[in-house]
Each structure stands twice: as structure tokens, then as C-alpha cells.
Image 1: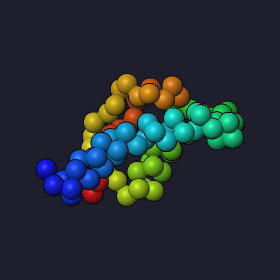
Image 2: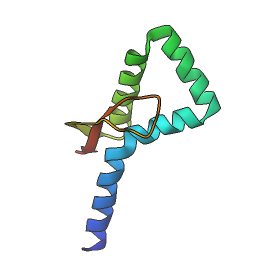
Image 3: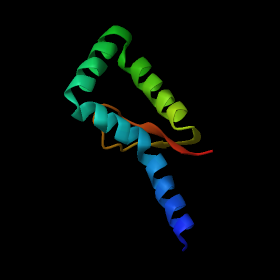
Length: 86
């Protein structure tokens, strides 16, 4: 495996985990978690989580794979769509 292939493989793993990692960052950061909880109180958990997931996809220019991770590490979500490079 060449360096380019290693980088692509690692990037693929990262994109699969990216949404989960974003939610982990939110739940571990006091300020972000407070804002997240306030947004949930105002709009509901499904709307907020869906918007965050879509924004992650857009921010990083990724595509949805049509598959889900039903065992995320983040406790603030039950599942998320797995993303990939375009």
C-alpha cells in the first residue's frame, strides 16, 4: 500500500466517524453542550440533530452513503448516517 492509499483509507475511516466525532465534541464542551441543550429545548432533539448532521455533511463536502451507524460513541445521538468523500 502506498502513502496515497494509506491516506485515502484513513480519510475514509474518518469520514465514517465524523458525525459521531462532532457530537462527541459537542457533549464534551461545556459551552457547546449548553447551546445544544438550549436549541433542543427550543426546537426539539430530532430537528437539531438532523440539522447538525446535514451541516457536518455540507461543511466537509461529503456524501451520504445510505447506511447508518447504530452504535455511536456519542450519547446525545442514537444513530447517524455514515458519510464518504465525493
